[in-house]
Image 1: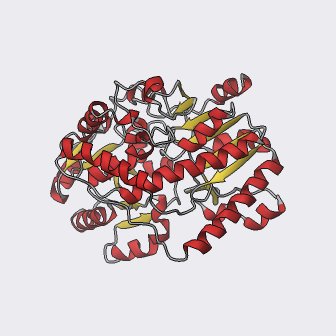
Image 2: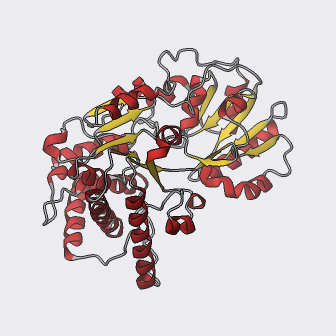
Image 3: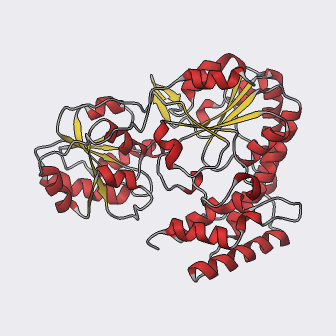
Length: 441
């Protein structure tokens, strides 16, 4: 599949998947398309949920949902945020995407934390003291005949366009039921609240949140959290219009810079760039060392590559930067390089600006940090192990390499600092944009 996006969009349009409904009228394709795309792209299925002690887990989750609802209603906020505190700032948990906005509305807001469980205090939740709160808890239920009908209908389309069927019942069941439970939870909450707006991240999981907000006349905003141009999370077939395809989208989509307003095919009614100071960076030219940008999916391959490069590249220091999801693995990954003196494993000990001062060569696959590096004027080297037709901006400024010798040869050439970048990927944060929106609510 050299161009999976074109094939996927073609299937969506030709099979009229956006118009398929459940018996209650729910348009279900937009609820499952992300997961189906991921299965088709990797041919892997998420493992089924552990069904041991289901009754106890469901009971426990129902209690958490009641406590969270009670907390939010008692706090009576004007603003509700979904946050993902995967990083740290001044040694405290921090969400680089949304916390700088949360700070502006802190007095009248409640934050639902989706990543860092340490930010949630159930003791404070009970006592109504300031804390971040858990998201709605998913209650496990068995598949029904209607879910099996959905699976059969989707597989007819997949078989027609890709020539094979996929094992997707478990993930479809979860996606549809999570959406319904999420909608019911927020709908009941919003009926009793005095919220002015809710804000989420564009990871594809907030459909129930946005629909409940719309039903209760609450404005919804969504923050750009990723930059991969072809991500299915913020791209739809250009033939699909919001009104006739019954998509569930936020009222406002807030981007890092104006370049993304036109790059994505995301049919939200209002797309506005607000910038982000946590990612904004100016050109930085300093030491000539090498930075590897890791992530969970490709970590083992990048470790082997970094180790091989460290053994033949003794004149430069190599920094191996972990993704936030890998921070707890730092000791284990550091042991992998213990016999190579010029490789240092780092998490968030240094800011992007600090690390760019000591590294002019950045190696990776797909990462927001690569776009930050381009804006800082760094040399970008892309490991040629993926299909990059959905990241053409990276290919425009970076260089593909196939192995460690190819990488070393490209690094050893006269540096080609990316001066061609005219429109920044990240602009400075402009609070006035959100302030103007909120003032009209």
